[in-house]
Length: 315
Image 1 (cartoon, helix red, strand yellow):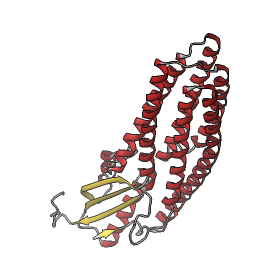
Image 2 (tube, rainbow, N blue to C red; image 1 turned 90 degrees about the vertical axis):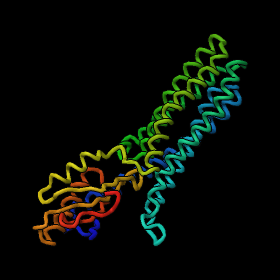
Image 3 (cartoon, helix red, strand yellow; image 1 turned 135 degrees about the vertical axis):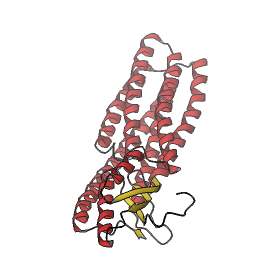
Image 4 (cartoon, rainbow, N blue to C red; image 1 turned 180 degrees about the vertical axis):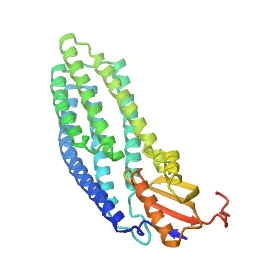
């Protein structure tokens, strides 16, 4: 016998409605942050690219390449948010929620490719320095600090609720620190004519980006492979369920991410045989309420009898 999340009683529905309202508000706020971030960073990429070519600065061009990939990431994430709201169909019964995870994975791969291309040119520039106008480099990078910090603050509120939002926040914050490094390099170059420093700073910029990208890559890859999400503790979930009066045992537990903000669980549950059908349904509702407070938004529970043990091979 299956019990789905629609079988909540009135009190559960009321509490869940408040939860969903919070999710919608957070989603709307994130949506606005992504749009603002796209506009601000697109304008700055143009400025950086033009200045980078004019001053022959590889550091500026590397940072522009990174910012361009960030813009692409923001666009993909915004698209994923929109697709996640599309209603389920007969072909896609969960809708398109998982596009948020695929967007995060795509962002990480694009960044790695960008790092590889810019890294090659940066090493070449380090070995064969070219004159760079350090003063202009410092000014343009200084503008980047303001834009990146401002953009990062847009995502600060919701960074702990969604992987894409967290990725955008960390990228923009890293960009601000990177821009600070480019400012320092530009000032030093303008006074010393150490043109090799441009290539060195560019390589340092790319290494910083690589560290942040690796984390995003591993997190999104894990979720793509239906691993237990990082914000869910499986042993804790099992303990929460088994401590509820009337629950004899549970097995065949599977937890995975439906999107970067919603998680699902399926399990086989053995309840006390003395409970009536209505009591079991109320107990299932209580369990789902507890799961909701432990980052499980969608639960499907199969009830079993102790007298009729599970015959599935995976049990």
